[in-house]
Image (tube, rainbow, N blue to C red; front, side, top):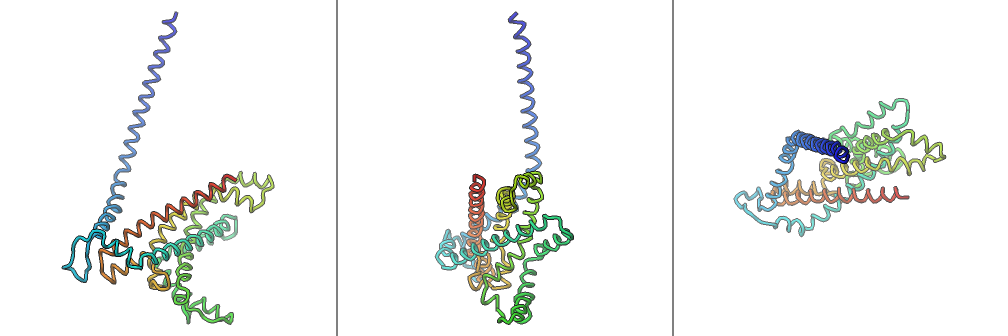
Length: 316
């Protein structure tokens, strides 16, 4: 009796074990296939990004000024020491962080405002959305030139025309307010970028949840702070991360509008000065490595700060 009851159970255990092994084998095969499909893209990405960065690190350890082509050799960490002690690096770091932070915060707030407006059913919403995206599609150099001559010019700029119409004195924006000039241009250009990301998040929000909150008596502000804003956490993080990484490296508005004067000499412009004006390849490479490190630090700090804010908001 015991033998007849345990034999089918033993066979069933063997079948289950065989099925589990087959599933693991199929899963491993699928994993190898997926990795094989991704391998060419990963190799191309490594070749495209990491090898040039390693070459830049190699250049940063060399004494190499194009004005003295024969005086070239290994210098170790001298270029980094010169960069840290020259007195130009830290003001550039402060200018880079300040311009990036102000531009990202302002473009994020304005992008959220416009995204909430475009999320509503309004006549001409498609046309308004297309027009709102346009500034982000303009080349950075073209955007800087448009603002320099069409908006900020002392004689023919629209901003100064409005000021003179109101009886106020014209302002030389690039000279008197260089930092504000750069931040305004970057905010104008990156607000559509933030708007698109946040609009995608708003349109993916559950309408049933909003209707339930409205039925429960939650007002617009309470619904926004307790439901909509936590839902947009991931989209805000993506927008801040990508915006910070991109704005950290901007060069065109600074070169065209201020040429690094008035506290707007960022690391990107300082690197340009070393490479194309001073023709010092070694120091320019060292500043490039410092820029990459700063980009990683800013992105990490931004993400950690956002995580803390939203975790605190979600625990209320």
